[in-house]
Image (cartoon, rainbow, N blue to C red; front, side, top):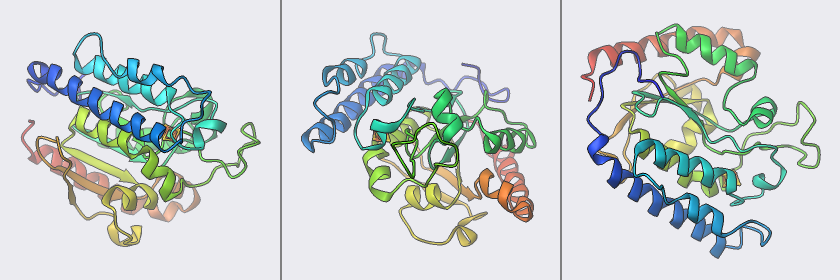
Length: 262
Ligand code: SF4
């Protein structure tokens, strides 16, 4: 993985063993919880997630690989049954900025990668407008499997829906593990669903967007500054929202330029 926008190493290598061990514990707890609740069907290989959650080499990359494998093995909610591919997330493991959407759509389900459809192409341009890219940021979703209106038609386009609160709660361990692993200085939540779910509040996105918040998680060395904005898919439907997102991206760029790189 490349480092973000000329960012120097953050001196975390010495902590990687501790991080990997913590991530392993979190993943085991998450998967054990799913089994205890009978959320993982008997057909799911119960031993595989736990084995994958024990990195052979205690590095940040190994911890991320363990997380990716755990996501791919997960059947922690019904979304896992209809997906073609799980979409764990990708990018720079040392990224200063993490973009978080609500969940994969049709194209993402096909490729197993986040934000690769039309909305994703727009997100690429939005990031590029402030000197970021998918190689220098980290991109993930609240849920890792495609929420479908009709799960029996996974090959149909236009079958997308927002994840339910229950699905996001079932998957929450993964996004929180990713936030702890990346430990970004900045998080941009894309759209109402991800913003409200991560902040655990019901304020409308029109009021949330553009207002800096802080996200604290146990195990995070420092709270991440969190900026909600509109989802790129909303901009495709309502181009007049682009100005607000541009303002938000300028605010992000200014915050990055004004913050010491930890
Ligand atoms: S959405 Fe999350 S919890 Fe549900 S099956 Fe996929 S990875 Fe597991």
